[in-house]
Length: 445
Image 1 (cartoon, helix red, strand yellow):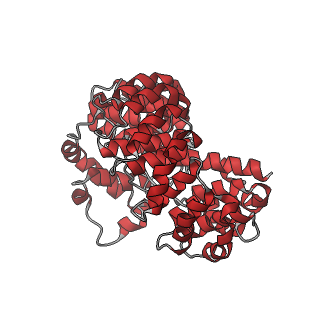
Image 2 (cartoon, helix red, strand yellow; image 1 turned 45 degrees about the vertical axis):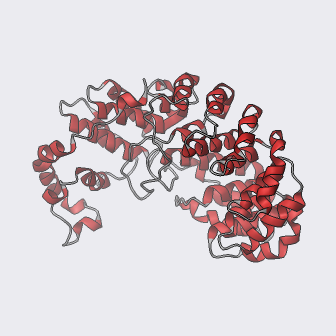
Image 3 (cartoon, helix red, strand yellow; image 1 turned 135 degrees about the vertical axis):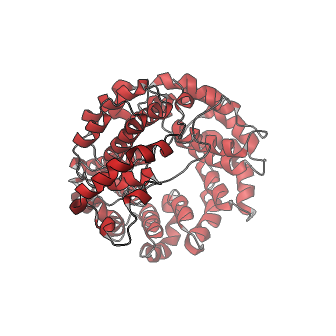
């Protein structure tokens, strides 16, 4: 069941090239009048030349079959003796599913059928697609740990606990972003282990012992950072506090521990003195220390001494602006500067300044328009990373955000997936955005 047993070999590409050269040349001639504009340019490489990279060829092949119909992908997914065709069929299905919701029901049985394929890469791609589909694939939740985690199925917990404890893992060693919404080609890859764990706050109590056991000064720094990010997302987890307090004096790991404690909140109050000292030292991550100090119960005045100037005078202010918003009315003294910054051309600075201004003063007349402008193109299916936090900040403003709610009211009915990055993120970004818009529509009334 483990993902590592599904690892792709990647050895089929050369055989794919020779086997399909003649057929694709004929395909090229037959569909010449339907080719994307870029392929009709005189300097576009010949079909034979393009076959040196068959997965690039899949991009233009998919472009010939626009729209959400699964018919072409289903035809490719039918049983075929050639393993390269079965691999290519799943690539086509992934590209279609990364762009549209409606084909999922028709394609799921065919994808599940490939889980028993004799070829490792075919099994891997089928399991990875089921994981990406998440709740839509709940009836097939035993495909792999990632698929189980995406469906919030507790059967994933023993395997994930083993991997946290050090068992060999097929998950990525670090977070990665690839592909884009402009790319109808699905990039099959697994997330990093900590990215899987952040999706499982409902099972934090079960996973905490394994996580806490790895929070030590001798553990790999990247592992500790990833696990601390998980704890920050999970929220209150008092069992982890003693291990995190022990890391606050470790020069390489204290920032990760501070991030986790900020997410846990007042239960981590034992770290106030150390965090205050680090915030006032002026060293690297002083802003993080000041924010974490406030989050675990510190005095607002001390946090403002660091966060106020960092948010309103810093060269890259938006992380500090996001943290300053947490201080709410305590930051009202910076309102004039925040009003100016809300008009910044750089969208991240604009939305975080507008949100901090609202949190400090309750102003909506000048802040809602800034956030609405940041999400305006979302109604047309255009997705950028700044949009999800902008929608969430609008939701906090309640009925004052009605103009944004009206603008986005038709989005839940859209069949097109909303995402900026490709691969599995195309699915999780879409789910997060739709959930945020639903919450906005409910809050705005």
